[in-house]
Length: 221
Image (cartoon, rainbow, N blue to C red):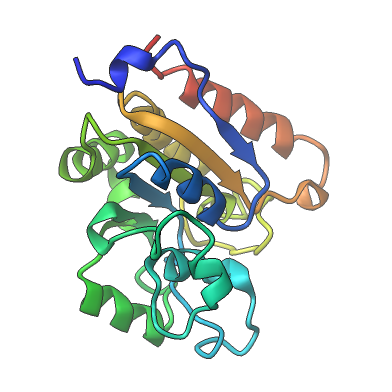
């Protein structure tokens, strides 16, 4: 049994609504090493000069990794800078077409690994299991960051960015998330970019909550 699995009686931190994962990465980095599975259609590895909009929610992993061109105040928000090493980040369900040229170059240069969205769609449980096998360490806190825009807006209209006919069906997301939640090293989850104002008839939010609860129920007791 791992050192972390012996602490499963501690409530699992679940953070809702944030745009970037830097805050909770910093909290766990203060304790030592971490591993992050970034469950998102986008790598969020841009810097202010690489995207005209300049929106920081495109830049979470870039600041965690301390990529050149990021804002020093955000890079240095935690106990160490940068917060993550490239080998501590796993891009899960990333869309090959949902990356800027700058992001593709950074991923290549840094050697960041991941699982493409089509692999998750084909076998949610298997893809999640393979990602855990390659990336998780039973003695290192595992952090999971879920961006709701990984869900096809046509299947569940909740994401801030309404990506239509791209990403995963929500059923595929919850099945993959359930496997991630079963890992004994899981230490925290963030869920971001959900916009209830996009729910046309009030049915999408309850469906999302039910799926999230079902996934979390896989956590070992």
